[in-house]
Image (cartoon, rainbow, N blue to C red; front, top):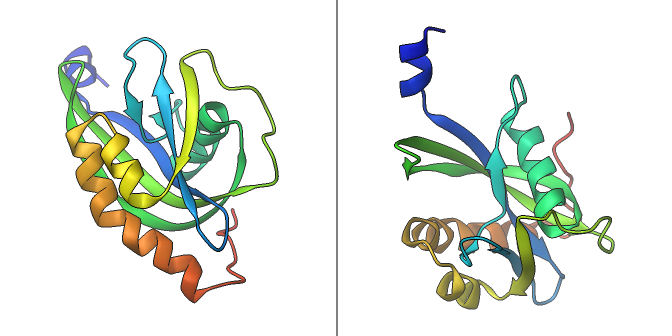
Amino acid sequence: MTDSAKRHAPILAAGGIVLRGKTRPRIAIVRLRREKAWVLPKGKLMPREHPRDAAKREVLEETGYRVSVHEFLGSMSYAAEGKIKIVQFWLMRATGSPARELMDDVKAVKWLPLRQAIATLSRPHEKVFLTHAGPSALDYFKKRPKSRSMSR
């Protein structure tokens, strides 16, 4: 890739709409330490990393939870760092208790009902995404009490 192509290439990222709990599921949102913003857990892909693998890694780093990965929920794009950032999201379910400490960039994790998660998010484009993807994420587990994760 030429230098010019690298400068104009989009930033690729991945994350998850992460649910915990069965009867009244909660959605994970994380507080960034520097920006003090509440966001969905996500992050940039490493070279040659599959987006689904990156989403799983980023969610573990930012929430502390291992997750099972279910269906693809969609993507969003927005301006960031003078480029277009494209983020792909998967539906995930947190398993067990926290498996690790949060990464340094994350100050806190909240597990909230859908409406409260949408209201708490700091970025308008994430509010819109969760408003549209959140109900189908919740319905997915209502319809599949013994759902299976995507294997890879």
